[in-house]
Image 1 (cartoon, rainbow, N blue to C red):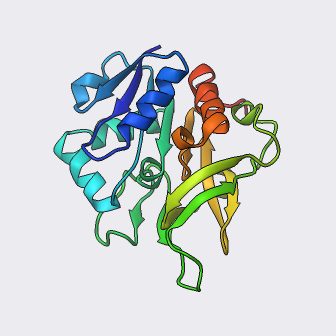
Image 2: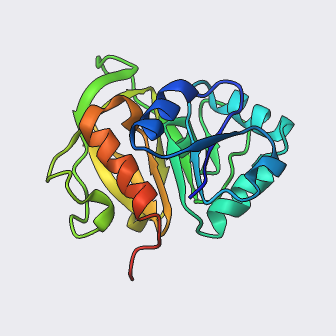
Amino acid sequence: MRVGIIDYGAGNLRSVANAVSALGVEYFLVSSADQMEGITHLILPGVGAFGDCMAELEKRGLTGPIRDWVASNRPYFGICLGYQILFEESVEAPGVSGLGVFRGKVQRFTEDGRKIPHMGWNSAPPVNLADPMWEGLGDEPFFYFVHSYFPVPENENIIAMTTEYGETFASAIRSGAVVATQFHPEKSQQAGLKLLGTFLEVGVPMES
């Protein structure tokens, strides 16, 4: 196993790297396409803005390789912004295209008196408890969130977890070997480590 963590200059690399190390797994930082050679699992942490992230990935020549990686159903874990950029566009950055692996748009929480960003612990119950990716998490695991935006997938079949924050949103998706979460597993203590560990151990398409 060779785990690559995408370094686009703004991701929360240290926390993710520490979490992977805590699982006893060696990781490699990936900041160019050639560094993806030999990688078996790819993790894209996300901190920052949608437009800036896409610009930095493009500058490093990573947009095409990451898009191809995800589209070919290889093990990918997208965290927060690493989840959002899988979609076509975001209201945060009008005119900027995401990777477009999945159809849908990233929306912002509406201003209705709730605190934005959505920050802190919240539950993310799995849609399909039979999926081995969520094994050991229980019916209603809690994870740590920090975000103002969230994807709205057109294909509801890929929605794997949902969370309530004034409205129900897709807090995680699962499509074969591709997993992406709006929450931060690397900041979510045992539940987060369990989920990352399962991804690195399973990392294969779900049986259809």
